[in-house]
Length: 56
Image 1: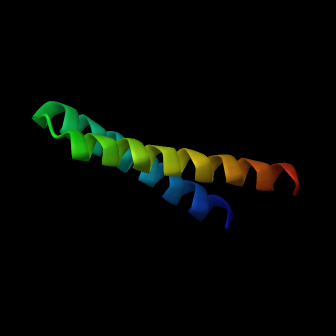
Image 2: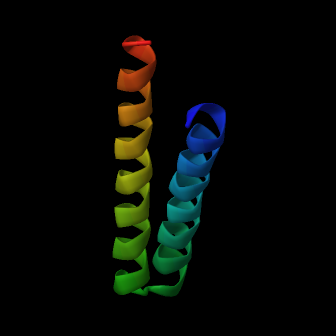
């Protein structure tokens, strides 16, 4: 878990930001929503990693 998971979660969050920006730029609401979903997943996973770190 650890550092590799944190990096993967951050990558998912950043990918979501890119999708959201692309959707906003092109007027594609579906892509924009998908980007927001990816960001939320990444943030949720990051929060889970922080909880795990707290209990180590």
